Length: 124
Length: 124
DNA sequence: TAACTGTACTATGTGTCTTAGTACAGTTAC
DNA sequence: GTAACTGTACTAAGACACATAGTACAGTTA
Image (tube, rainbow over all chains, first blue to last red; front, side, top):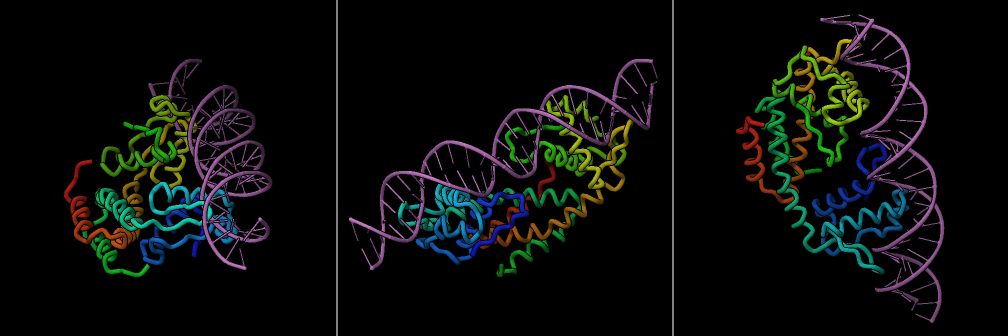
């Protein structure tokens, strides 16, 4: 369910956060669903429990998951809403990316094609 | 001419690389132009000379600049071409960004607006 | 010759990420 | 109640990248 790239420059705990968010985005995990326990996931990924805990506590701080001592870590009710709002905040990032590519000499046509390609593909 | 954000998570040497690339992209610096010397820029930015050297040597490795011992560091003849090719390689990144935002519930209309905004703005 | 240029090297400090180990408290099923 | 799970907290240590500090050498230029 989770996969860690040890060669990546992004920290393991961030990779876990991203993957949890992706699972929610894709509808594979839904509000109320329980995430793997800190210990079991640490074994599955051959990673220290502290690293998993750090990921979960950040997901909790973001409001995406909710940790309950003794019970587990669960996807929050409004997880999709939070992720959607965060994505909307990234619209400006999209604008800047387009502008930079344009400045670098990428044609408007090439950019439009890349965008349409994003619209047409629904699979991961 | 250069500005460093000490609060940023991106290393200083990478910020310098990005800014050199941006100056070339914007046409402020052109092939043959000399970059500030390692020592003078290190003083200007209150940064260690080694940090500047690291940035310059990476620009050299990328083919964007060319360092000549005793003379200085100069923008390479084909710097724009290299940057343009690199930008084209990022078209897939653009596609993925669009796809992700779509999955997260951002509307197609919002995405198109952000893209058009990038097209229409020419100022930095 | 003097003042600049890039380059190379060692040593050190710092911060983040990760691991390791231990401990405590809440929950659940038997 | 007990055993086995859950999250949480804490200290200690190692690894690594980034940056600093200082020195030194060779090439270029006026």
